[in-house]
Image 1 (tube, one colour):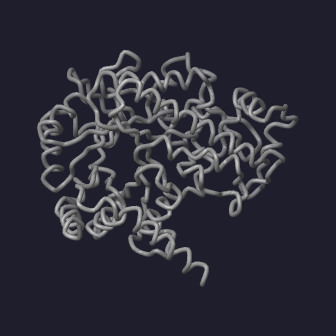
Image 2 (image 1 turned 90 degrees about the horizontal axis):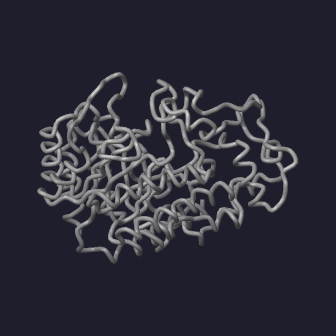
Image 3 (image 1 turned 120 degrees about the horizontal axis):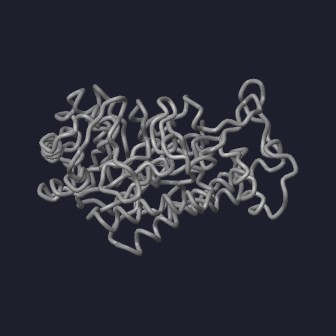
Length: 414
């Protein structure tokens, strides 16, 4: 109990000290506009204008416009990717530029704009829709899963997966993903770029020959038994670590971190005023299998986790971000002694990130039908900003007034 109390004290102390310097400044307050969930709702310009005005009226000062969901098709004028015209059987053809209209209306209202793209997913396995199903040039470039029965499965064939991910280790995939970032930043006046799904799909992929070769290059030697030297699956779905278990997770984290670094360099070569942002779940110990080490390289995971190592620590990509959008998508709000609370999740992120970048608390509106004012207020009081996902739930549950109350409560404390 004593140790837990000490940890909670230092989490609270760090959060308080790191945030105190921002008193008096208007905090960023983001509302996310998901492309897939709002595909029909924002088929008309009038609807976009109406909801941007609504967002402004309750206190939001920035919007996140998702223009490339998991299908790999887009809602902006692209020379690289086809337009997104079909979602769940609904077909909509726009003869106007979706992203540009958002930007125009946001500027009219004095709102800032973050653009977001799903970086590596390029198809929807459940419906077999999207880029990797329509174009044969992606054959062999999607992630290969190492399944619990010891077999290998192309992620395009796994209907349980949220998206059909391209393999982040491949140079051609990375070049392709960077070209999307380049196209948007060159052609659109955005304030920030948020990386979404900039990760591996899970700990079961990628186990392709490409990843084996890259891992062997990372190690500086051959892996005799692949993937068994990484891990084998137990009957209960847990992993039995192999001789290169820790090295594998550090390698994968470095794959993602090096890409984030490349994105930052690409953005700044075009417009160094555009901020780089990244959303990930706050429970960092649970997403090591996705290659997402959003912490500072100064953080140490080697003592408390079987996958942690000095090399994994060094892969932290917080220094390459302007803002970490901390995914505290949790039902419980308060509790510095409760790892499942938003308050704890924000404080943990601040401790792990340090001063490398800003940390915004982000909330999943669906979790807070009756208490979103409290969640909003806490994020603004304890972190440097707020993001709410997604406008679809805010609309359907009519959360506007409660969000405004939360914003006003927090601002009254400043």
